[in-house]
Amino acid sequence: MKTQEQQTENKDIAGDGNKIKIKNFILIILFAIVFSFVVQDGIRLVIQKFLEIPADSIGLAQWGDTFFLRIFASLFAMTAGTFVIGIFLKEKVRLAGIIATLPATLFWIATLIFGITIVSDYGYLFESVKAMLLLPVILIILLPTAGYFSSGWGQEYFDEFQRSKSVLNIKWYHWLWIFPFYLNKVVAIPLFTLILLWRIDVNSTFIESPIFALIFDFGNTISRIIVFFILAGLIASVGHVYSLLSEEKTTAKINWKNGIIIFGHVLLFSILYVLLFGQYL
Image 1: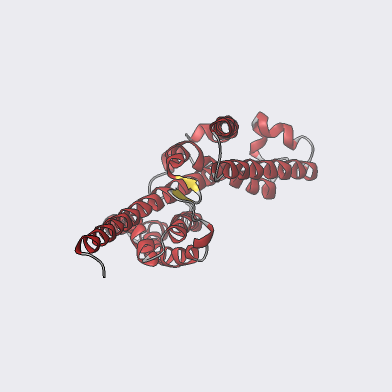
Image 2: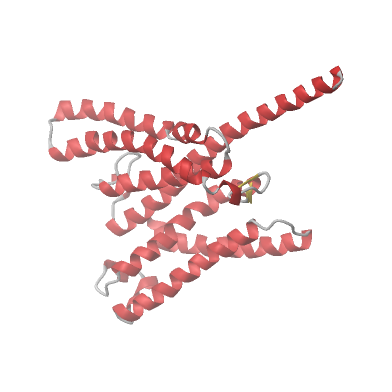
């Protein structure tokens, strides 16, 4: 039989475990919210670039006259963020997924209330109704739905991401620089290149930029081949950074070497980011 002292010790340990679970529950929700916001910002830059939307037409709710693209960006970003919840938590995953959508959902509820006021004052024009009423209603419905299903989907990959004190097998402290300096670039630059591969046209307005004039000078077919290899290189760069960040056991010497390599990749993406999107930053 266990002594009273052992029973008390076991209760204390159990209590500490519950505290850790609650802390992790809250932290991963906050992580998912920030992750979704950064991903959405990367998509926004690409949409703004291709559609040439002026900076004064970009707001928290509306991005120029976009409608379906605005819905896609919000849903994709939320799906990505809440997917991370699924691979991190073992219990109450779908609940956490829905909670993570609350800030965005509340924002769109506020936008809807504001839109009702605006539309009632200025008339029920189709464009106004679409932007101020229909867009918020659709996202109010779909965002919690995306959070619910995406977090459950992420849980299917739970066993593949079990590195301690990590998210996506990347140590938590790396996310302190990934969020502000790297993640939105990882989203924006490959996505931009992928769309450019599809939309290449020698008569495109992008040819005004020297960086594109050199590519487009070879004609559509050769230009697509060049852009394809650029895209492959960007994906390989991101994959290399991830493999270095997710390495299990390293020495101090290897950490320094990896840090220099990672810095080079981040610097490359930062330069491309400014060249591509500098006018919108």
